[in-house]
Amino acid sequence: MQSVTVELGAASTMELVNALSTIATELATREAPESAAACLELTETLATATDMQESAMASFIGRVDAAGEQQRWGYPSTRAWLRSKLGMRESRAKERLTLARQRHRLPQVAKRLAAGDLSYGYATTVADSVARLDDTDCAQAESMLLEMADQGFSAGKVATFGQRIRDVIAERDGTEEAPDQDTKHGYDKSWITTTRSLDGGRYVKGWLNPEDAAIWDGTLAPLAKPAGPEDHRDVSERTAAALSSVLSGGHKATKVTVICDLETLTGGNAPARLTDGTPIPAAQARRIALAAGVSPLLLGRGNTPLYLGYRERFATAAQRQVLETLYPTCAVRECEIPGTLCEVDHVNGWALGKSPTDIDQLALTCGWHNRFKHTSPDQIHITKDQDGRYVYRLLPPPDAHRRTGGGPPGNTGPPDTTFNWAA
Image (tube, rainbow, N blue to C red):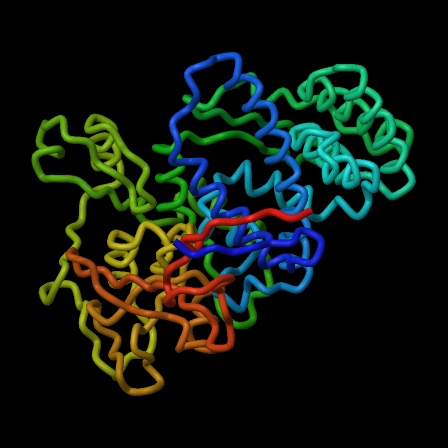
């Protein structure tokens, strides 16, 4: 076992992080003490230490975010990096990113969090509350919310008061919004409300459950594409025109791709799924099939031309339908962009003459990763899984050094060390 001495005042940030990682590894493998009272005290002490670590992490994340460093590693945004590489759920990634971006405007919060005098929960609550305030209102809100925390109000009540502060400021500035009543409808059933305007038009808003959303996408998405290079309408305008076409009957039958077994369509109970992975009960799948019609997906040569060779540059609608079935999300392993919003990628590069427009040479990648793949080809490692789908994995940039300690490449765990602490 390697012995390492760390002098806290002289150690670099890298040495401190390595030391902390080693201690955390050792602590995580130990059994909890038998005494419940001791465990309570240890938990409170460890929670305070963890909050101070969150202060350091917010500083690191803020520097990464400001420099855009995550893009060199193949992640389109800081939040995508936190979700994909560090395994954070969306809510936690958003929470940490908000704190990282707001801490420079919250000097009291930053100082107290780093000193262990304020919990991470309170810090993120204040950061979220001031994120949409200007600097003057931010300073006043910080003092008021910290005072509530010091008086013993829970983080939830501080968050509620933070919302009240935003409402008062919005009322003062004349930017308040009407209370949102939409959540009263729930999410199980689809609903639409319309209001006629004085000039004869209509305002439309609503919610579609997954089944109806699939029909919406299958019907309107093909009709809402740009009509050509001279079509300068935005997506909302094209969608409105597509909806008008459908309502007037000037459209073809609805196209919805439902992936299921033949047994499901003939009365079985096995669930189906949409191309984005949404599960569909067997009964709903049969209703969609009856309303939209059924067309087979031919995963190979046959009646649908899926192999176009080099004579065609762009994938056909039939090929895209197959790809959306194969790729519910971007082919990049850590990317969560739905396949229906992705672009068709020639795996080995059509322009290089290595990848014909054949179904087994194509994959779906989001627009960001499609460009990243062609500008940084050495940072994409491509394999195939057992089902024949291409899997793109991100590699570090050539000049990057991810290791913060010794050991072979790829070993991201802390070195096996013993530390002697000297304050």
